[in-house]
Amino acid sequence: MPSISVENISFSYGRGDVISSVSFCAEGAARIALLGSNGSGKSTLIKLIDGLLPLKRGDIKVNGCSVKDGDIRRIREKIGIVFQDPDSQFVSPVLEEDTAFGPENYDLPDIAERVRKSLELTGLYEARKRMPQTLSGGEKERAQLAGILASEPEIIMLDESFTMLDEEGRKEMRTLVDTIWKDSMVITITHSADEAISADRVILLSGGRIIADGTPETVLTDYKLLEEAGIKAPLAVRLRKALEERGFKLPPLLTAEELKEAIWNYH
Amino acid sequence: MNLLGAYTPGSSSIHKLDNAVRITDFAILFAAFVVASGFVWGYILSLSVLLFVFRMAGVPIKPVAAMFWRFRVFLLTVFLMNAFFQPSERPYFSFWIVTFSLDGVLFGLRMIMSIMLLTALSSVLTATATPVEITDGLRTVLHPLSFLKIPVDEASSIISIAISFIPVLASEGESIILSARARGALPGGRKIKDRALSLIPLALPLFLSAFRRADELASAMEARGYTGEKGRKRKIRIAFGRRESLSLVFSLLILLGAIALKGVFNVHTS
Ligand SMILES: Nc1ncnc2c1ncn2[C@@H]1O[C@H](COP(=O)(O)OP(=O)(O)OP(=O)(O)O)[C@@H](O)[C@H]1O
Ligand SMILES: [Mg+2]
Image (tube, rainbow over all chains, first blue to last red; front, side, top):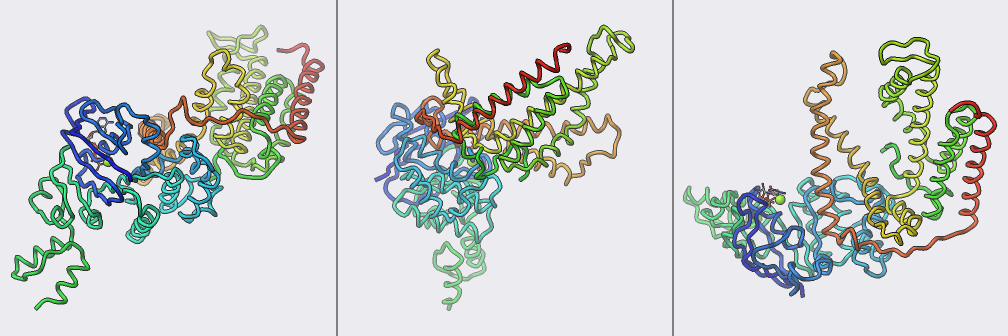
């Protein structure tokens, strides 16, 4: 079972801490949203978890191995990251070669089979000989999923991924992630509260600190906390509040669906 | 994308060659082109070989011509620099450091011919082999050097990363130029000096974003297990068949031909 344990870490790029005394634990097939405004330290945090930045204060353990003194390749093998900008992540001018990159680095067996499966699952098998740089936006995102899928990671981190896609495309990608990795831990990094609704746990980051950690129902309806983090509440939550101020009493809710339902049943 | 030297998937004999043999072939042809430079028959040989290799590979020749056309100012500058600054015993005229002579003109021509022929030849290599295949080939060919404690694996990886970066940079350059144009930067239509200056706002973001890109690419590669020293342990082995031997015989013959031609036609110059 995948597990991450972040123990009181702090980090600085040189001038002041961008991560201060952060701790949290997660295990199993959790769906976690890491929510925070621009510059709150989200990307830094996941880079620390993957051992891409040197950690000096505190400790991080992935599946029980510390990023400080464990075998970093064995840790990274278990983690798959989809970064924000798909264009700066392709290492080969041939899609299937790019997909094979991870498994080759980790010396995993049956590379050809892994590549074929990953490309089929992401619907890119037909495009396997193409140059990833010339794929469409949505195809590029799927190519990236294929690239990490091939190493069969247990922990997936999506750093503001899919932001270049339209609403339909984003929904499609999220469904794909949920089906491919239904038994893995998925950490979604985002600055939009609406994106965090579907998670089962929301970690709210502000100025490098965790200021809230709980269910979407508690964190995403807490105006004071969200304001402190510089995040707008989900649309439905704001609408509900506006209606409440005009005297309509509605039950607590998060999504547009729930809001519609509540208005429908209003009496 | 019709990028010069961008990998073009295909099933030509050159695509199918063993990686190490392909690299060796191209190295031999490269040497032959160098030997055959400086005299007309040599250029005829190089040019015919080049056309033949393009045909064999099924790689279009148009992007190459287009690229030389785009760099015409650069090529012209190289030519003029040589034509006017090459010291000579038989100048038409000489003034201060400027010397104009037949030797200079010939030398200038020779320079740009070499640049164009060798660029075109190497573009066939990168068009028929992916960076991974090139790394593979280099690693095998250079393997003996690793006994001298030369970091062959690292050197091969660096070369291949540099090659895979070309299309990224090119597309980046394209999008920067587009966005600059969209905001009113027009190439041409102004005075030369302004035009030179107007390149700066284009070049600067390209450099900056190239650095950023390189940084992000490095992170992404590391996140997928790449460590430089350790990753990508492939076995050293050569698949040597009929195609491989034929290609080696062909390139060696061209090299010998170039040497012979040079002996016959080029005794007095150089
Ligand atoms: N390589 C770096 N060198 C110096 N400072 C950096 C570097 N990368 C990030 N920072 C700084 O660290 C802070 C946190 O950055 P980080 O990228 O982790 O934020 P983020 O939450 O991911 O923001 P965004 O939503 O904009 O991606 C910011 O103030 C940023 O300026
Ligand atoms: Mg970020």
